[in-house]
Length: 102
Image 1 (cartoon, rainbow, N blue to C red):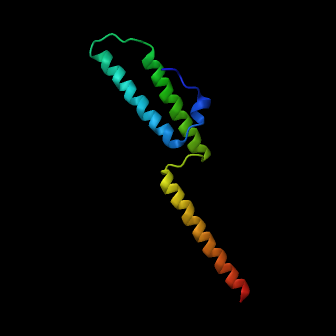
Image 2: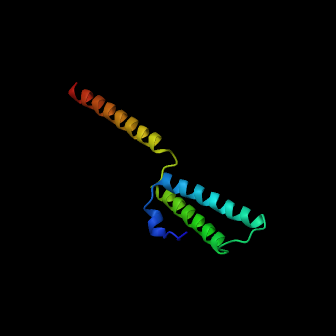
Image 3: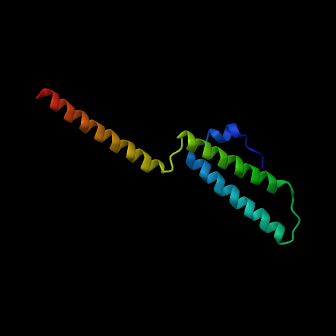
């Protein structure tokens, strides 16, 4: 497993980042289970690398949340909300136009 650089992680979307964290946590639990069962680890430093990559990914997710680049909602909810706000804005503009004509 090659370590992914922070620059590459920042290029991923929110959902991809969440999926990455889940997969890394699964991989970490498998490695820990293998060691706890008594078998010798193939690569003893792998757990450290996985833990660091999880931390790096979570840090980037939090950075994006603080900057407002990541929504806690899914893409469908986010697009629906944008469409609703556009519709309400259009209604307000129509009302303003009618009020000006009178």
